[in-house]
Structure formats: structure tokens, C-alpha cells
Amino acid sequence: MLRTPDDRFADLPDYPFKPNYVTVPLEPGTDETLRLHYVDERPSDPSKASGETIVLLHGNPAWSYLYRHVIPPLVAAGHRCIAVDLVGHGKSDKVADRFSYSYASHVRWLREALFKRLGLRNVTLVCHDWGGTLGLLLLAQNPDRFRRVVASNTGLREGGADLGPGWQHMAKWLQLTQRTEDLRCGPIVDGFSLTELPATVQAAYDAPYPADAYLHGVRRFAVLIPINADDEANPMISDAWKVLQRLRTPFLCLFSAQDHVTRGNHSALSDHIPGAKGQPHLAIEGAAHFVQEDRPAEFAAAVNAFISST
Image (cartoon, rainbow, N blue to C red):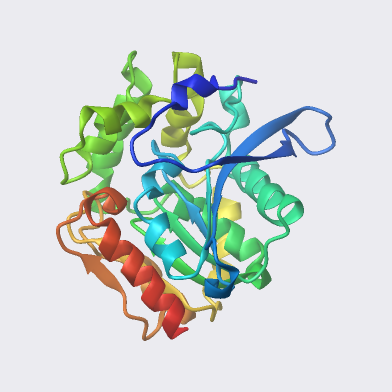
């Protein structure tokens, strides 16, 4: 198990949040554990708290730093915001064995942390990229825990079917993550944002990874993308869709008009989940894949409006 030294996170721009941690089993039935980090921000005045709990899940190769400009306006609106660092990312522990990272393990770690350790219920899930894929699996397995869902530039699909126009981007991403020796996350986030990120912000995205061994979780996500009909994740995804295609939990798609894969097209989710019918789905203009970097105020406002309307 690898743990990023705390001094790597000193003086990050616009990230003043106190760290919080829970410990979860690495594998079921074993004594080996790992530490998962989360931000937990809420209104300082209890009389201004709405009682809504928002769980924010980032994608790859980001971490909870992605939500640094989204959390404050949501807290100001009265909500409690819990931004998790997926295992292998941010301030959470990094597993030395890259093959420990799988769909099932990520969902198990999230379920253990959010429900067994933190005891969360009536959650508003805000999930982006891989955080969306994992979040949708978690939602399908635990639908009674969630009050509403906001999905951003994400999806949930089995391997074996036509991969569509996004395949060229996925193929390039696979090559980049597997063949680049000095892989840096900051320039990647910058490259998939319309906003030009300052060097200090790019450095903050690199902060969790002082050496290549810490990057196994980042690299592993790329090879977990289902491609073939016999992909090991297919049964889990198929089972999830059996629930999602009947799910009436309010479901909002908050995509980006300039996302490099979807170009704002959220129909793969919005056309197939009953709770998405009639919702005010958005493809935010002036935003690429990392909409939280390009349009954080609009993103937070849309989440808050959705909560207020449901």
C-alpha cells in the first residue's frame, strides 16, 4: 500500500478543505485495509442547512480537487458536500498491485466508505467520468440510498457493441496511459478543458503521484474500459441496467457541449432511465470534458436548481 506524503498537498490553490478519512478492507474477509479520503463541507450556521447531502465523485485522472470551485456555492446554498477521492487517486491510498483495481473493487470500496462507515442515506449523487460509471453501478446496487442523481460526461456501457465515434479518443487515451513513462495528470486535465489551467493548478493535479508506482490506479482505469463481448465487467454492467431502466429516481444529465467524446449528447442515459424523463438536461456551452474547470458556477447552479425542483 502506498500513501502520498501530506506535504505534497501543502498550499494547493483554492483547496482549503480539511481532510477526512475512513478505513475500508482491501479485500472482503481480510485484515489488510486502505485509507480513503473525503472532503466534508457543510454550512457553518446549522439554521442555514437544507439537510441535503451531496456526494461528488470525480473521474480519471482527477481527484476531489476537481470540485474545489463547485463545493463553496453548494455549501452556501445550504447543502452538505462530500467529495470522495477514489482509491488510487488524490489523498486516498494507492494499491501497489495494479490488478487490485477493478469495477467490483472500486464499487465495494465506495459502498463500504459511504454507507457502512459514513452511514449516508437520501444522497444526491453528482458523478463525472469514471466517477459516473462507478456511481451508476453503486446506484443500481443500492437505489434506496439515493434521492436524486446528476451525471456529467459519463456513461455505462458493455463491451462488444459498436463503440461509436468516441473509440478513436479511447484508443489514443489507452496508448497515452500505458506507454507514457512520465505520465502527468495536470497537463491531461488541462488538455481536456477549454480553460487554460495555471501551472500551479496543473501541479495540484499531479500532487498525489510522487512516483510512477503511485499512478497504477490512473493507468488501470484506461484498460478497464469494456471493449470485448467477453469483458469481465459486462455482467455487472448488464445487471446494473436491469435496475436503471426501471429507475424513477430523479436523474439529470449535466454534460458539456464541447466534450471530446459525447459533444453534449446524453441520450445513452437520458433516453433509457425513467427518472430522466422530462428533466432539464443541459449541454453546457463553453465547457469541455472537465466542465468543473470550465464552468464551475454554472455547474453548481444547475445542481442546486435540480435539488430545489425535485
